[in-house]
Length: 395
Image (cartoon, one colour):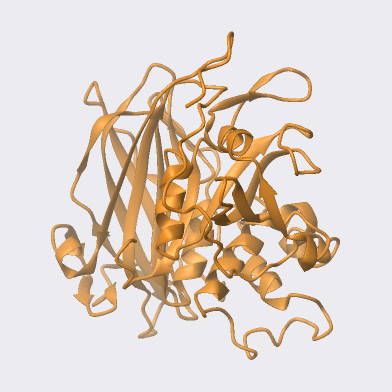
């Protein structure tokens, strides 16, 4: 472990992920028009009608966070046939026993035949605010517990229903840290998983209604790589709307079906793991403490998508800088350096990169960094997408 550099902030982080899934998990919640079936939670009978849609809902029991948190990220797995959608909300309780309002963490539909997939901007009170896909505590406020509410919706008069397989959240609290000691190498040394390689810049300037490719498509490109690694993904029929001569059509498909209309981009964390769940996989947004955690997953055959932030020249081997970028960790060299499928490339041959362990861990794990103007800005702080088959024992 390297000592902290003088004059830099080094701090600790606490992380708690909790999920409700399967009959046993959902059974402890409150039901209003919903029922448990083999595929998860679905509409049994409409509890109400609003704006041309029927709805029913399920509310989780309150989950007590084992520390005082300042950040909650919600994610879910669901199948939404045409004409169906769902909304996911969170209510938090603070350490002073104040409750936040029910905050929407997104309206999700894979197909968008009846509603637009979107986060909800402008939500806040004295205790917390929603920042796209995160519930962030106000200064000097900490969160002690939370509940989730999932509302399943369908077009009025139809019998179709969404199916919710899982809903969960990762809570965390991080002391400010701009420098993170490097972890010791572990069980992932010398392993590289055969993950497909997709470059986001081959789409630059195309499909502007979904962000226009290029810099904006790192998240769906990374997500699609992992979805296809597991042998899943869109069929030829699903890709028929994309011109046949366009490269890497499945990435375009992923961008379309993760696009957040309020955020105006494809980088909504929860929407990306929800996209993977449409293809029979389980996904969650979480936070990991170190590359040693990633090695655990890689050693069991699970690639990990992570979010990094750095200035140009700060990460050796990367010819760019970014305020937030998603890439796939596919393995480790024998010396413990990171092997990544980095979609920030012009072609598939340039996607595979090897990044030195110490600087990579720092640009992924720290909570603050200096931008090009010297201002201190927030960073993703260990965010990871974990996507694998539901039967995976390590998931």
